[in-house]
Image (tube, rainbow, N blue to C red; front, side, top):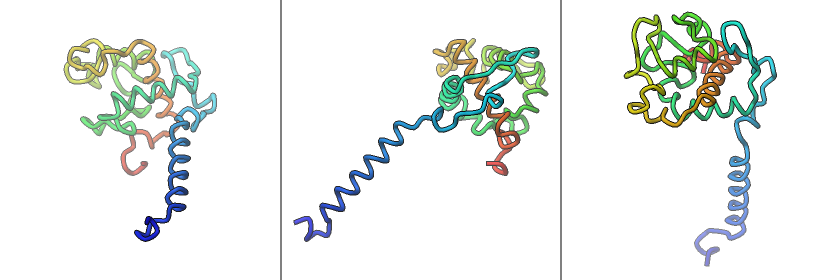
Length: 170
């Protein structure tokens, strides 16, 4: 009957097996497995005077937080609300206070301020201080904030101008 309708059962079986193999491979391939970074790429500033080497697992956890919460406005390191300020290292260094290290970024995620440090952005930027407004931040702990900050710094380091550089680099 299937042969009459033009559907060969053997072709259907082969297609099904191929689809299963592809799906199984996709489910078992994670970001951390796909991109194991060198130690130099995983070394970022913890503070203005200290560095830290992040594990691939910390970066993968940071990626998950970034995708879940940050990527809506900061896709590929750009800033949707202000394209002149990115998550690139130069822009993070130029902020007041500087945001080019993990602890400074964690502080920002708790108490965000404008780029020049003049204005409080608690009601405009997702943060843990106002989790009543920003429910996506409600369940993040210190480790999550450090992981996402580390992820952003690693991306800025590894991708350079491609992180936050806009369509020209992506």
